[in-house]
Image (tube, rainbow, N blue to C red; front, side):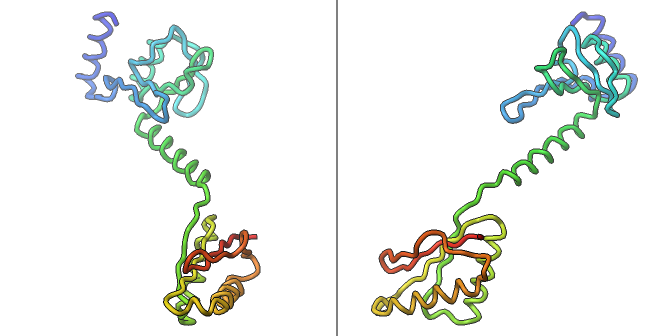
Length: 197
C-alpha cells in the first residue's frame, strides 16, 4: 500500500476517531476465511450497500473508501464469484447474523441420539408415570429411547413380571409409540427400544 494511502487512513482515523477502519482481520469460520477492510485486495469487486442495493463493480480501494466514509466495514461475502462480492456492513452485526445462522443450522441438523431409561420391577405407579413422561419428552426431541428393566436377586425367577411391566409401559406411552426391534434379555436386564411411529 503506498505511504500516502496509509497516511490518509491514519489521519482520517485520528480526526474522526473511528478505530474500526484500521481493523484489518481475517477471521476463520468453518474452514473458510472472511476478509474485511484492508485484506480485500482484488482489482475489481462487486459492491453491495448496507441496505442490499447493488452499487456496481469498482476497485477494492474505492470500495474501502466508500465503506470508510459510511463509518462501516467492507466485508467479503463471496470470494469465488467473478468478480468477488463484497458488502458494506457493520462487521459486528455481520458476525452476529452468521452465528445465529450457524446455530439454527445445528439445531436442524441435530441427529437423533439413543437415550437410556432404567427401572426396577418394584417401581411404584407414580414413579412409572414420571418415567413414561420422561420417555415421551425424549421421543418428542427426536431421540430413540432404550428402556432397561433391571432384575435384582431372585427376581430373575419371575421374568414374566418384567414382560408385564414392559406391556404396561408401552400401553402408558400411547399408540404413537412402537417397539423398535425385539425385546431381549441380556444378563439381568430386559431391554427394548421405543420410537415414534
